[in-house]
Length: 215
Image (cartoon, rainbow, N blue to C red):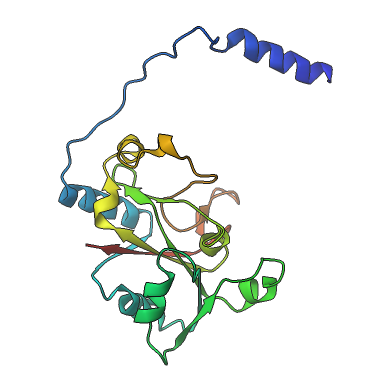
C-alpha cells in the first residue's frame, strides 16, 4: 500500500464513527403537503429547470406520441420494463414516431442508439416535490442509457408517488428492505456551464425532458 493511501486511511479511521458509537441525530425537513400541493410544487420546480410537465390519464401513450410527432424519428423503450406492454398497446400503428425495442447489449446496437434514436422512454420510481426531481431505478430491462443518450427523455410518473421530500420517499417505499444498484435523481434536461460559465442544455445528455404525470 502506498504511503499516501495509508495516510488517508489512517485519518479516516481516526476521525470516523467506531462500532460502539451512535451516529449523531440529523434533523430532517418535513412538509405537511397534500397530493395536490406536492404536484404543484414538483411541476413549478421542474418547469423552472426547463423540464416539461403534462398531466395525462389512461391514454398516456397517445399523449406522448402527440408531444413527439413533430420531431418524428424513433422512440427507444424497454419492452420488458414495467410500462413496455402498455406503451405498445396504446401507440398509434402508423405514426411519425416508430417504436424501437431495446433488446440487445449496447455493443450490438451502438449505431442505432447514437444515430437513429430521437427519444428514450422510462418509468420512474417517484418524484420529490421539494426539489422538483424524478427518481429513477435503472434496470437491465430499462438501463440508464435510455435516459442518458437520446436527445429527448420521456418519463411516466404516477402522481401518487410524488413525495414532499427525499426522506419521505425513502420511508414510504421502504428502500431499507431492498436498495437498488443504481439511483438517478433528475431535475431537468442535461445542462452544463463548464465553458465560460455559460449555461447550455443538452451538452452531456438529453436537451429535452418530457414528464407525463398520470393521475
